[in-house]
Image (cartoon, rainbow, N blue to C red; front, side, top):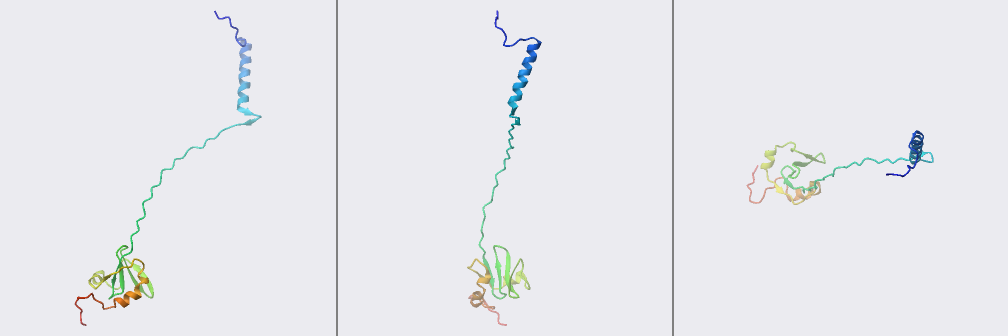
Length: 140
């Protein structure tokens, strides 16, 4: 048999005393000197990784058409020429058809920057009626 006495009386008075003790202890755990203690945990936001494509630099390659003073940039698919003392870049040349331009003599350029930097030299080297060696010259 069990002869041990309970820690407190289990009648109604003991039950009420136990409940009061439990409430008192619980209140003391939740408060510290009348101040409420709380812990806020911010939600974790997971950002997906950003994938950046490598930058591909394509150098400018030009073909010069001396009869018209027009450059074609094969990398950008644009024509460059002087108009009213300013350089113009356009998808089609002004005042001449692309077929007529491509039928005229042309020279591949060995520079990869702006034609404006080389135009004076190109005009001296390849004058307006220039033709490659061995080409038939029209006598007009």
